[in-house]
Length: 310
Length: 243
Image 1 (cartoon, rainbow over the protein chains, first blue to last red):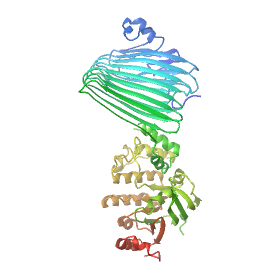
Image 2: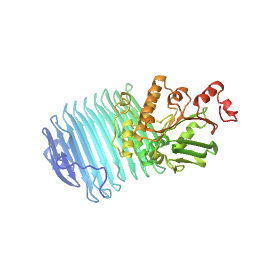
Image 3: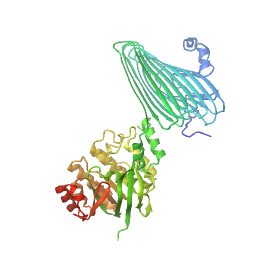
Image 4: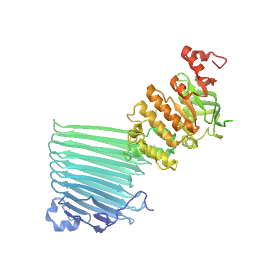
């Protein structure tokens, strides 16, 4: 069965289009080099700094000049029992501002596929990146993204991750390291149904005057278990904030949030707020009095909680 | 002869084993304005919510007939679609849901293209999250605008006038007259104020005490004068059931 709400970029619109275990298209705009990871590993010996061994699949994107357009990568699984094991690397050179749309999805709901992706994103001094990461999976898939962001001096990152069609199991790890005056805002939106979801976020302030925030909005429905471990670590003078909000929609779901702050610098300020609750019945009834069915009312409230309407 | 729109017969409602509406009867005809007065805690808001089908109340006796249909067991959304509309006294704030997005939902339910507000007062509200940080007046305007899209045939106004200054109240009344009353809509107005009665001149006024309708009269001013002078205490001892 083909999934609802899944838009797959066409070969022409994506800069990197990868289907199952096969490259379908690469389109590199001016000033941007895009290669398959194994090809890049062979071409540039310095990539051993990032990859200790030759990757089997994935992409290498090197932004050397200011791009004039959004960079899009599209990784799709359409074949049953496909296993992807991607090694991705994105490098933004000094002072460049880039926008990236990263889409990983299954084309149908019952593929029993596995998507593993280890990614590294490097923002050189003064670079900035708006990174939109969209996942959409089938209910029998296994998904393990593991991304590391390195923000050099004065670099800026806006990271947005969204999962509305969850897999059976998701293990989602992100590590963001910030050097001097670097800043990062990370926003994660997850709606789980019949899923087991593990989220581990780590933001490490390694440089003076670095700052960042992590915002999580998690919804657990239909026997979903979500566990989120989110950590801010200040090695140098920094400011960081963690905001974790969870909503549980049924009696067979659970959310566990573990916010952790580690401050090793007396000039740093790390804060957090966290809450997990149920949906407000008064809000549902209010919307029902406006003619919405119970399901429509819940959807509207949940989408509002996930900030999808704003 | 005007046809009966809403007919409430011997309605008895419980909340947690306590009777909060007791053997209540009410008839509202097409185009009529009825006012409902009573002290705090007498059951006015409960009646509004029961008419709209909102939980957690349990109807143990009697029935509610609307447009000839027994709606006693209808869900709130079914009642709304049938033409009942309620302006909440204290509408809840819904985070992340803008007034505009709710209007679009309401409009799609009605299979109408969404209209966009042109009035200055509402233009400022439509991109804000519903009732979040709204002033008292803004809440009332938001409520009424939602009803414009729902286009109800019987409008229940639960203390639409509370917390409003006279200027704001006049604007809201003019809006009600223009958008609803001119179209022969029926009203049940719950209030504690004389102003709204003066402006809308209800055809029938009722007094609710301890969950019972104890008095109904066509002369709202007579009732108002009595309440103003003696409070609701006099109503308790009035066996004629009329001032």
